[in-house]
Image (cartoon, rainbow, N blue to C red):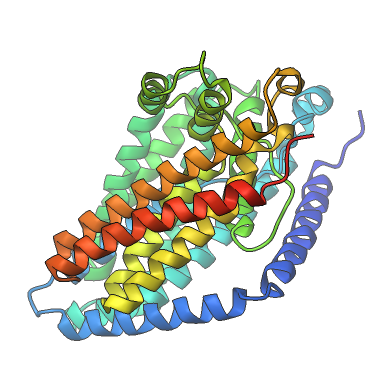
Length: 410
């Protein structure tokens, strides 16, 4: 089988980037997207500036910077653009795929180094404000961290190759060891401890060479590469889906035993099978599960940056609108087996189930944000109670509106 695997990789990379540019243009052309992005960036800028002004001299800026950079170095995902059919059609050419994955490692290293440069630029004011004058200059720190980033990508690739031989617990242990080594490397790079850097380099290189020595030449981790690519694509689509409607990406099913048990306990599948099915879909496969928690995090950050009572009420309103705008995806018949259409249930049952889920999620959102507001004293006691009542009433009103606006299932 004649195959130029390197050319195949760059062909897929070009197709992916062209598609990504199209999605970015759709997102940027959205009605409120530029305004929303501008408000968020301005808010983050002033919040960061206020934090730097408040930061005392004893604040562990170097420690915080080291933790952030260590997490960034450890999270060295490898982009391969492996498609679902590749384990079947490319398996005969497995021995000729070295060029493909070599190009993948080079591309992934370059992308992670660019992320590292952006992170250093963002963290440089924090590092300059809390670091002594004898710390490494930014260019030297970037060069040393880039070297560590390349080693992390190589170790991550060998860890994926060893999934056919080692348990996932052992692979996670290697990842935790990398995090500790990356933290020590970051601290030694900032303090220019050359002996420590040499020792750490030998340890990380030894880990990589040890993995290479025990890694079998074949088979390649096709299933893991396919699943990782699907998760990565799903994450990108989730973020873009906040602003524009995009076709769904096949999302892997997750167990989430605790949440599913709670849903099973409080939902009677005999009396309301649709509600039972939707809750399980929400926890195990739905994109809304991640959106719900991201909206919570976004609302908390924005409330912390602008602790004004009217702004807090407006932020909660915006978060609720964004949550309810995503809810119809939960009852999309394309996400369920065709047997769902044969259920002998009235059309209103689909809307009623969706409205109940929307009420519960929005109520939970209001309750969690109220607890955060009370803990940080952003509002008075009376204002906190008023916010809770406002959130619960708003959730019921919006659930009723969503119930009437969703078209019936076909």
